[in-house]
Image 1 (cartoon, rainbow, N blue to C red):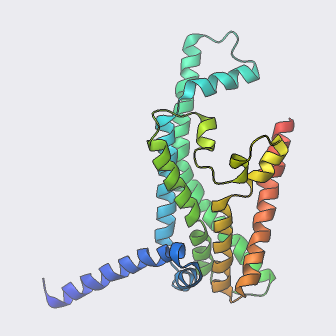
Image 2 (image 1 turned 120 degrees about the vertical axis):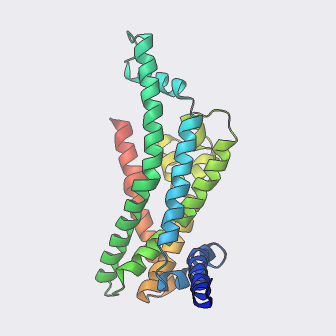
Image 3 (image 1 turned 90 degrees about the vertical axis):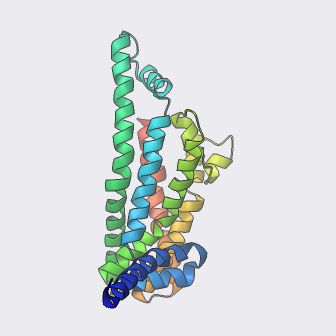
Length: 250
């Protein structure tokens, strides 16, 4: 190989390794690591890691899921089990298993990138409201980096599910007890939803989101983190408490 080509290959390899290692610094050095990754606009590798981890956990769950008990319980609750033939019940079980597999893959490949893009758009609106202009690519980097703790959660969940011979829907929800709702016992359904919002990985993501927003806009870190906490509180109040409460009341 000619000397120039070898040097070019080494530079490309170094660039790719830097692109991968720099976002990983947010786990060990969130202050400087997040700032450096946002300023360098590192969002591709973190997004790929996020999609891979979420898809892996969803796919493995669908393969380990003991579908029959959950489907039968759901049909009993809706009153559809009576008069259902064995063949129809088998079809429903197989359909739910296929839906879980497709949904698990789609959550990582489609939903996570869309969530990152939506979060970046929200950050752009917030930066405009506070008159803190920033590059959209930097805001996208901040959004994707903030979701890395969620990728870590799904990686841990994947390993835990892999250790199970079979698993139910209720069991997988508490397999990685990262929120107060999974730790505290005897709570009412309403308090259970409130306690579930105090989640280690979600709060970690919220902190990284504030640090990333600070790096992209120049806002002070303390103010940016408080702003991220306010955004998470609004999200939790609507999607983790309000909407589930309304669905349960119907």
